[in-house]
Image (cartoon, rainbow, N blue to C red; front, side, top):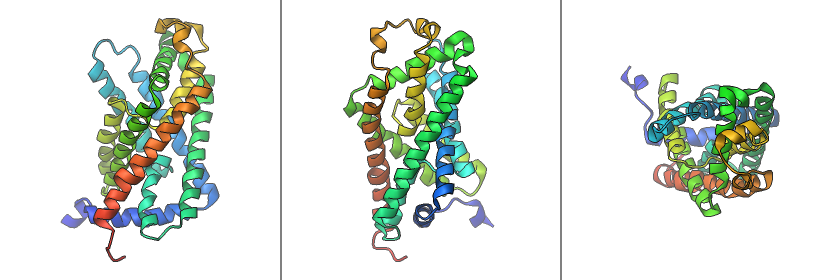
Length: 278
């Protein structure tokens, strides 16, 4: 009975990740697209919760970031429990590819479709959030917070965006690895909370989250009352546009990809699967 209560060992997890990678790479188009859109929406829910938690945080900066990170974890918990397909987590399919179980075409198709599906889910959620009046909450405070969050993401250099992307998806894929080691829903939730809240609190960058948070900030910046609450000048908002959003999304995506596939995926492949029999 003890075996069923224990977490899977790292070598067992590696086998699970490889097997699941094959399953993900062979998933039919429509279910994959729908689950990808759902994942984009789930991450957006977490980002909305984060926006609420970060509104009027007073001076307790560290505690506020921790609280915001815990709130943001909602999105990844939904992905894990419901089964959404998330580009960053799917970087671990590289284990199945490296073992020769998935072709290069298959893995590229999966990553491309999931990335686009995540983006579509996030963009649709931005529109729905705007239509709901959510940004007017707390006397336009949610809108002001959305602007500030987006500005923090577009006002960094491309190098910073890339490196923060590496850190972020290293933690995301390690969270996924721990989820695969879990045997219950409770295990999975706790496996997600700490690494995900950590990357948020430390200011790392997640490409799918940014697909929601930056466009939401751009939309919020159209509200004069929200802008007034930030106390920022028009010049300070000049980077809040779709051109800069795309410019910053590219290095974050590349950083996420490097962190997930190389820093975590290939490292764990070499340790647990390389030269091992199937």
